[in-house]
Length: 379
Image (cartoon, rainbow, N blue to C red; front, side, top):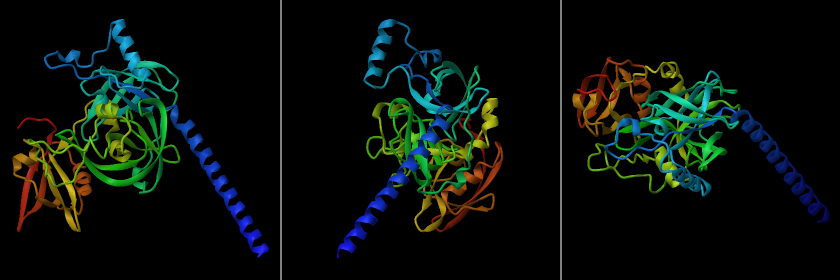
């Protein structure tokens, strides 16, 4: 019996030593990855909407008197959100000063404040905003020492380990080791803007992480955080004017402001970098124009097709007669088996094109020809 006990103890010691070796190896890899990434990650400071009645130039005001500045510094001391400014994250996509961040952080502003990892603070110009991905392109006049490489988000699998870098929990230059919890997620920001084909991130991300890069083990960006997930307050029920099915189960996502107010959340949703890569040049030029259909598609349980669970009022889809509960089975004769197919097909089309929509409405099979318009274009 002694030799059995001795063998068991030896095996246990060897297993513990191996486990410690694996953990130390993982730690070294994560530390090396963090050093590789952090130099290209920035914090972005926009502002808060001014009270109604003020001119557009007052939208993103900054405090000018000493007493206000001291009050805001007190809030920062206790890591409380500032009512004057909104903070988010971003990263350098080109050393010539091009920075990608969240649209919610800079929406409505002409300029923002960008702080680099080395402490430099510069003014950035908001060049463009893409409502489809909820991202914005910012240009700074100075060159950046580092830029992140873009990976292939199609290769990301559920369960992949990723690193989120940026302003997390209100603290700049922070890191979070996370997991890819799912792919092809959908969600709604506010009452009008919905996003699809998103990557669900499970991990301790929260205040200030909007715009943060999600990188793989090679230090390549595979996604950009655009919204938070919370099991409580930020899963808002639809309002009386919301043309989204009440039983659709689609979460209303937290914006950058809400992430600042309510801190750490139940994870986040990120835009796949492959969806961004195709429009990076247009975002740099400032002439980004996306075709807009105006529906929110959702997968059907155990059946093919994409169910329309939301129709934006006065959108091309609404004006053409597409309704809640319709099931899209093809677009331009390309089969639609799931909601992600709708997004994929529409992103290949151009502004002004007419899309042939085939759908099921009860026992009827209907076809609509819908001219794609620019988001926000009046009828």
